[in-house]
Each structure stands twice: as structure tokens, then as C-alpha cells.
Length: 252
Image 1 (cartoon, rainbow, N blue to C red):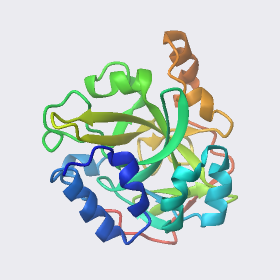
Image 2: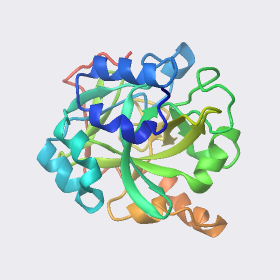
Image 3: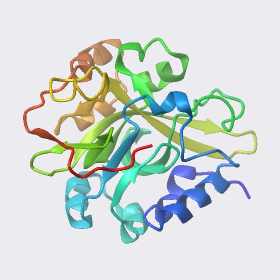
Image 4: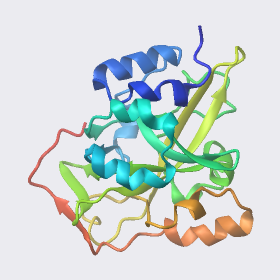
């Protein structure tokens, strides 16, 4: 029996053991390859991030958007120190005029592809070319999203807020519809040029959306609305952030 609503039906399993969850989702999505990216993908940022916030803090952070529908996955929530492409991720997105939480595969499968198990599955999208690339053009117009994170990881270093609070990674999402009625929701993270803090670490960094701009970011809007969003795609102010190179993590 095909999974008709990947994003919602899988949500209650996200907080279980990561290996079991990933295997279940790969089976549900028709044998899509998840987990380890190919060699070309490994050079990109952001390729790993964390959401190891406590349930209490995460619930407080997401309170404006939580509903009873979210109870199953909240009951099974477990902090995740290292989230990889191909794995399910928690996403705040807007659909049918309503903001909601759900889980999607990290690695964008455009809705227009014939077979989501073939072809590239980008987990990053460059801010400078969102309106140009076929895979990103539609989602940039209509399907922007936010991924809660507590840190992102690069070359053995952990980048996080000094106050330890979670933050929003800017993303795009899309939905693939199969001929049998099955559905697959997937997403990617938008990157931009590095700020002063990260310039010596990598030539890209994830776009971070400031608190309070969630609704503005998620609203589809028109061309003028998207133009107004362009400043948040620029390198963000590094004050209030830190690089922690003492807790080395195997990134690749």
C-alpha cells in the first residue's frame, strides 16, 4: 500500500531510533537512496546540522504552530546531534493558507520529475540562483520553509548561537505526486556567502531567518514580496554566534 501522505504519516516515527526511522522512510518512499551524499555533494554546506534541543525548549519555541496533530511525534521526539542529507527533518511550512509542522526528506525531489529515485537530490540551494534553477524556481516562489536547528556542522566545527537557543534555517520544499496517488515531501537548505566568522571555514553558509520573520518568509507573495526577502539571503551578522572546534564530530 503506497504512502499517500509522507510528510504526516511518517511524523510519529521521527523521534524513534534514527537507523530504524531512516530505513522505514526509505522503504516507504519506494527505495529512495538516503543517508550518505555523493562526492560532489560532500563539498557543499550546509551538509550536517543538529537539533538536540530539549523537548521542553523545542515545544516552547514551536508553540505558535503546534496542534494536536503534532502530539504523536512530540511523544517520540529525541534530540539529534547530527542530521544528514537523506534523513527526515522537522519543517515549518505553509500550505492552503495555513502554517504547519511536518517531516520531510532532506534532499529536494522536484514535483516535476518522473522518478524521484533517480537524478540529483540537492540538499543545498544557492541563494544567488534560486530564481534561475529549474529545481528551485517553483519552490522559491511558492514553497519556502523553515528548519529548526540548534547548530550546523562543518569540517569538525560546530556553529551555534552563544545563548544556545535554536534558530531557523531557510529552506525550500516541494511535493512529488506519483501516478498511484503516493506523495513525497522533500526539502533543501538555502546557502549564501560566508560572514566574517565563517569565512576561514567555508565559502558558503546556511541562510538563517531572524526570529519574528517566520510568517513573512513562509507567505508565498508576489515578485515584489520575493524582492523584499532578498536582504535576508545576505550574510547574517555574526555577533551572538560562535564556532566550537573543540567538540570534533565526524562530518563525512
